[in-house]
Length: 111
Image 1 (tube, rainbow, N blue to C red):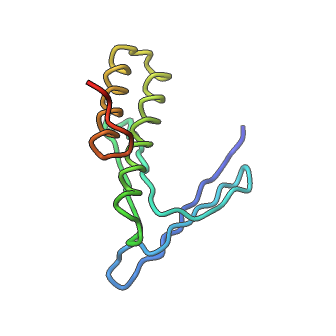
Image 2: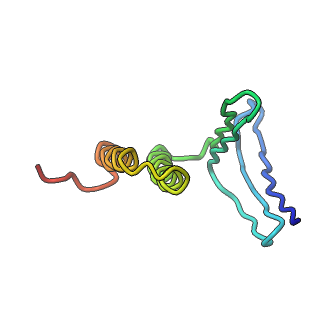
């Protein structure tokens, strides 16, 4: 059996607002800094999701919009691989495209 650790380090300012976020992974020597994390964990006993959502005070709103869009797209990919629910995946991809258009992340689609 193999074990891997991923550690996050959060530096808070005097008002407990994240100032810096860094991470380190044990299995590949990876490490770096980031401006936001979204971590979701499934509690099997409670049948409930626990979440940690953090972003630094320097995170730009436009970057947050891109972060959300890319997270929605990758969640859709994961949902497809995990469930095979192709109709719902199509609807989710449509929503991702709608989100990108409304947040002006892509050019408007022609009607």
